[in-house]
Amino acid sequence: MDINSLKQRAEDYLELCYNELNKSHLLEARLAEVHKEIESTRAYELLSFELVYGTKVAWRNSNKCIGRLFWRTMKVFDCRKLSHSEDIFQALLNHIKTATNEGNIKSTITVFNAHNGIRIWNPQLLCFAGYRDEKGRIIGDSKQLSFTKECMKLGWIPKMGQFDILPLVIQVGDNKPEFREIPEEIISIVPIEHPFIDSFKDMGLKWYSTPIISNMTLEIGGIEFHAAPFNGWYMGTEIGARNLADESRYNMLPKVAKLMGLKLNDKNILWKDRALIELNSAVLYSFKKHRVKIIDHHTASKQFMEFLRKETTEGRDVTADWAWIVPPISGSTMEVFHTEMNNEVKSPNYFYQQEPWSTK
Ligand code: ARG
Image (cartoon, rainbow, N blue to C red; front, side, top):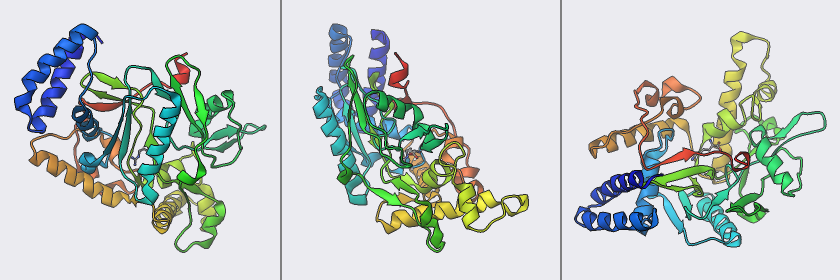
């Protein structure tokens, strides 16, 4: 980024930050300091409170996220001082452990240095491997086929199971990426069973407790943090209506429908729809049973509407991506479905970035 746009972005963010935090009397001096820093080093560092607030506003601005009512409550680990891979691994393990919090999931972000080329190769800190067997059939999560392949290239031994947690893979600068197995005792995995369809558990389905996105760039005031893993807690449909249900993921609907005794060739009985509902109810039931925090889509939709009202009262307009906000099942039963949304992209924010292994 050229230094004029960096200055402009810094100014825009610091103005927002200082105004919202009632520190506008300090803004002018801070801007002068930042301008000087940018002129002499072509970069600048955020103060700790500026970083912390930026991570939260970036969440507030995440148009695809239905869970933003809680944007102020994220726990922030400022790890900008770390540069050794060993310390970075430790910080990631610490994130998994404290965010999972024995099932009482806490929204958490760990921010690494923006300038020393740290990249986390995992799309999420916890994710299930995907492989092809000798016959070309997919085992596990097909979404992770290419990341799993990269892990194997680095020397990770595939286990060929349906639900194998992949190792953490990190890279510092141009060094070779390193991988590290995550200790089992800090991972919590929920076996999926149904409240009254007994044979459900025989499918052996499970999912992990904590979705920790680790492949997005956090941008605050023109500074790009390419390694800043963050998490919330699951909404049931992410697992029940997408991860386990999509034809291109675990594709479980035909199996679920069969064990419900539904006829798959009768178009009028809506077997996919029925199977989908039971699978989603099983996910919510199982997480509750194992005391892992999860939210159903109806409650999430209500919370999003409350977020809209609160933001409006505080004089901010909310931007949102309707296609992402409306949950993938039972859309019209929720108020979000009937709400118009403006999908403009604001800063600070979280952005997609290229997979690190495809940039070489
Ligand atoms: N949809 C993703 C998954 O199923 C997780 C995205 C973040 N979700 C969240 N509830 N914070 O793993």
